[in-house]
Image (cartoon, rainbow, N blue to C red; front, top):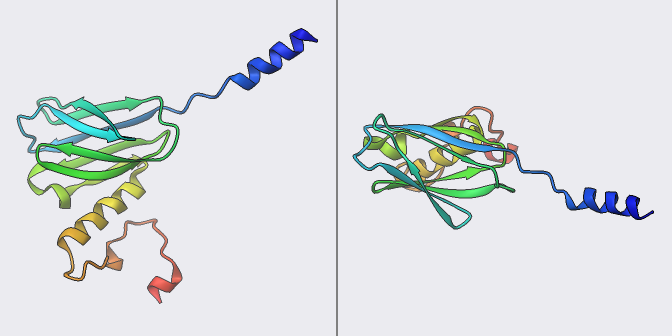
Length: 146
């Protein structure tokens, strides 16, 4: 009986590890700045940027979808990381907000965030999001499109 209780307790105590989350990318026209600041769940992480403008980061402890702030030089953007994402970012520092593109697992929500941020900041004077600016695969409510 004690052995059964010990085994059951061991199974309950074991929690599955969150899946590996990776975020990598390339910064065109990169500065001499050698790092990116990523703020995930209010914790800052410094990520090295090599001479070509490439960076790579992995996280094994992301347990839930988390808003994330990306800072490089005097530019910044928001993104959203989910456990298991394999996100790849490409950006041109000279045209930062309008050039952000994502691919890989997690790209749809982050492309949407980048496009909507650019539209609200630089788009129509009303700040309204243009329906044509949504990335492929994003389904809009019927009430929005008529």
